[in-house]
Amino acid sequence: MELFLFHFRLWGNTLEQVFLGTKAFGTIEPANLEAILSTNFKDFGTGPRRGITIPMFGDGIFTQEGAAWKHSRDLIRPQFVYKHYEDLGIFREAVDNLVDIVSSGGVVDLQPLFFR
Image (tube, rainbow, N blue to C red):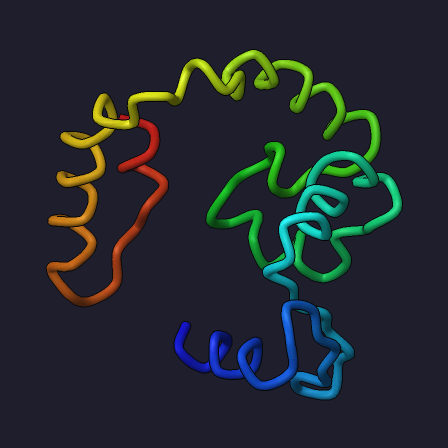
């Protein structure tokens, strides 16, 4: 994470780089993230990321494109109404438990933890 933050501090909130011979873009710019993940999602493909992330996330909103992604997004949209998250304290116990498990060291299989 520190390496990514170093690059953003050095080059700005959005950057292009070549990683292992493949052109990649990175951004921490809120407007760009909103476009990529929501308003202009159809303009951005998942590329090789889908094959890499499917073992971890399964076939869901983070690995889908097109009509399947739109269907998943429409299903979860009501959960992201701002009022639902005015008090994030409701997540404290679950997040603390997850951090305790993950920080124990070694390899952690997150999928069973997210589907408890």
